[in-house]
Length: 188
Image (tube, rainbow, N blue to C red):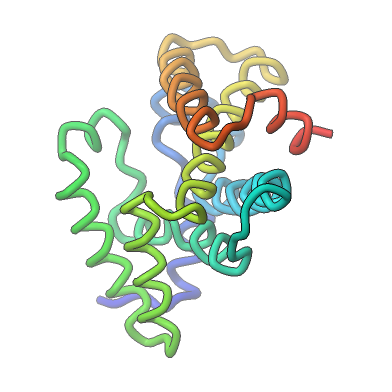
């Protein structure tokens, strides 16, 4: 059975991110994939604004990438990171791409969005790097929210936070940004 775009969006609004469930975040507090996607899109815009003074970029492309980066999860679900690592990027990307192609098959702009998704998973363009950084930042900041606002301090949440922090610093360095630069723009 093929899902319509709306059915996929509805699923993403109900699909809790597995990292939070595995971290024992109460179900009613656990962020869903749609919430995460909006955060990634907004953080992407902030990163683009920071970098826009230094480099030319395509804001529309960034937004489209951010909005579709987890869209395949409507079909494949939010696969826990340890399983993603064991699967490997090649297999995961193939499965994700097939799911996205199925989801977008009825849209006129499907070829454009599929090409943007391929660009995102390659992670080579400035726009893809911005979305990857925003995706990582959104996850890291959500860890902070669970710890500071809700007092949740499980070992798995700590593991996610530490792994995400390490990737976040790597991506920031690649883009000649600091965590302070990023936080100043997205938390003020």
